[in-house]
Image (cartoon, rainbow over all chains, first blue to last red; front, side):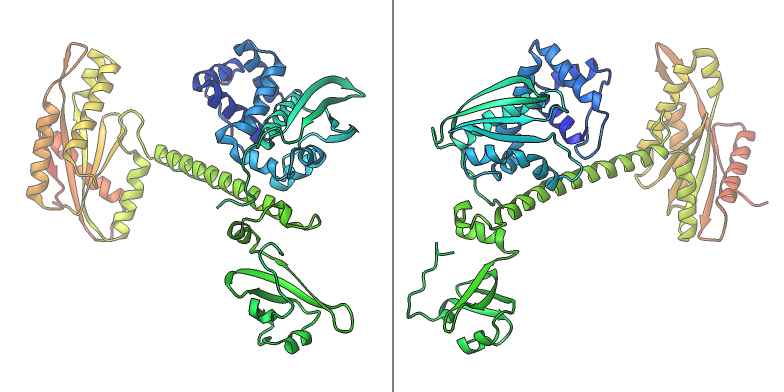
Length: 193
Length: 288
């Protein structure tokens, strides 16, 4: 697993729940003093163990913890970089949603050795979409739900999002775009010095 | 581009643009001659925004000057407050800006990671030159320093110091007391020697210190006398008095060609004489 993912989980834990919670999680996975480097690679199982430990120690479901992580990656002050790179994907929320099927390539442009799961977007009605996620990373589609919800907020759109159990092997997220411009959303300049 | 520039039918291209390459294109005739060739141009009132362009002939008397932002894209976006709507859907401007921003983020991560690695490397090297119990330097540091001083022809004095009655402290009061004594001695040395003097624990109860640039008999004698006095003061460990003394042998080097081992040997010979003379004292190396 790319260190960026694990580092993001570490930062999420520290920023939202504090250092004590991270210490607890690290001990829980049998690695006291654990800290990740964003540019290195780590064994895959460790990522899953971290999230399981988080869910256990916070008394939350896996789904909730993953969604919270997704929300954090877009909306926290410390993750502005990620939020900006995602905003580049579309001038409005609908364009952003439709661009998700090239998220894998976009991520690779930024970091060549970062391989996100594949995503496909289908338009199934006016303002109704399915986002299909290749289920190679446990919990990734829940993280994506959190991210999409936060991005809707960022763009100022009002959406209804529902995650469904795997159909034909891939995870499916249903999105109903209730209002394209419900609020002003947050400002985004193409270039900041 | 039409957002901020509107040419009327009577206006002259050269009122608004400056063609930088090819050189000398200052009128329409010269521009027509440069048709189909890559152009570098800029707005007359903005010297900083570089544009790229090409002039193509569409018909008998109609030409199209197609131009765009090149590497100046990032700056132009900020200068003119450009948004996605200002670019054609086929323009790669947004992708360019995305990659630029991603590159900055990754470079920053790289720099910070390298700094961390370098810091870790320095710390590891520092560890390799330090005696862990006392925090003084170790034999490796001694070898480096001696070699360097001799190489540079610098005058210096080497003092070999052994603690007297240290073994008794260890045997009667235990190793914890022994460690305490060693740490106390290190503190005394640290307090009385200068920052530029190298203080080394060779192991056991053997110490060496290097006085860089100091070879005066009186100065060194004063120092040694003071050190012996301080070291002989009993220290307390878990309610017990720990008493030791020390013997010192001094050898001074005056920039001559000599090996590190000979320097240490001579200081050792002087130390031997100090011990023989009854301990609790210092002796200078003498050739006799």
